[in-house]
Length: 578
Image 1 (tube, one colour):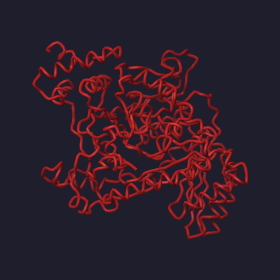
Image 2 (tube, one colour):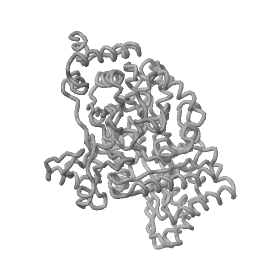
Image 3 (cartoon, one colour):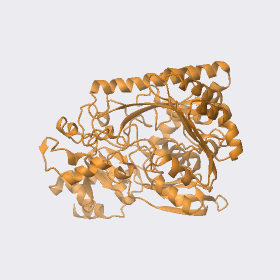
Image 4 (cartoon, rainbow, N blue to C red):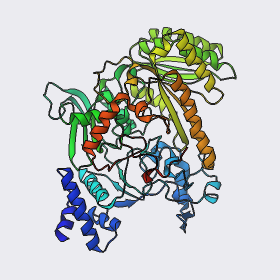
């Protein structure tokens, strides 16, 4: 055992092939058996004591954890209560997910949740008992590829399943996992800018103005960096989304995507450790199949991404529109009719943004201020007729816009939300029949909730056909249409099931008017009935083949991901069964 134990301790150990990982895993079993230690203690030794215990962020507020009394820490609990809905508080904490239902086990009711509407409400910790839930009981704070290699070998040797957590912005629970070993990517933070980045193995003529980003780096940091370097990074609509995680691997929409493309269109290189233990570089010149799969095939599937490189734009001057009015029982209908009737026109002009039943915040990098005002005159006039407000202005950069309109107003964290979405094609807006169908659908939503019409499809972007693995529906769609359901800490299991079914039924009305379209893998209905078709279309068979090539032992799995083993697999025992 001694020589193997020393070899396994070596931080630089790497595995050249699947066979070597399998051999190491087999030898590891023998080493553990001979060590008189349990598998976790032995594994901790191989990590030089860096294996850490995970638990939900709100645990300090509960007097009992997993059936055992514990000492109440009032200071820690106060910190949690104050920061519970703050993304910057949650981001650096392993056991804090942006959507806290994925900290608990929904099927069993095990949870350590606070009341998101009143975090000091004692009913949360007196009426409920805190348990491990879906937070991984152990995790590695990943610092280099050797940490990932050791995790893969450990999983092969012991059968312990793996999960990968980056920023925890996940509507579908793919970055948590009951009884898993988690790889936490948060502290791989770095940003570098090169005006002549050449993907490894490519000719010098194939250079890009690009930024290279460590896996855990999130968009607020990236936007600050970009502003200081007079460049624009096309990215997400939230401070703490990590650019290298599920956002880009699933597609990565932005309100600048109509002109500049999705995240998958802009990423030019991945550094990744695949489940065979190899540290690979994937780009247009090497590991091209893996590069294609990573550009839309979804996160937590192909390996552990350590770093990504993305094309950037010069600093962009933006025309920005903020329009709103107080909604009544009837005045949202004319607004939504205008939004529907002008949808195709706005897409052709390059508008991106978010539109709801009584407001919009849109941006345009192509028009002048005068052109922007003319473009939005009809919708502006309607808002003013309802005693609303209209601001259309020029801002000097993306960060200026982000700081003014997004920070502080972005999607709430610490709140329990489930989404359902659909990509609505241009064809739906090209005929009176199609326009009527869209409008009637939107009208039907209003008694339930306000639709979120996201102008984030790459409508004007000239992409190379077949270069990415996202559903082709992204390319000909005008809207990414979203609806959500929400609940709180004390919602019953029955009520949760109803909420999920409501979303599935709402999205069905979207499917009905766009039967040949698709959905965004990161924001689709949790119970999407034909998920492979909706998320990837005809790309799925090739994706599955690539999955089997790079992960032949099936070490990585997640809900409705490529190669998913299905809802009855024990890994998904905390998901509610509809």
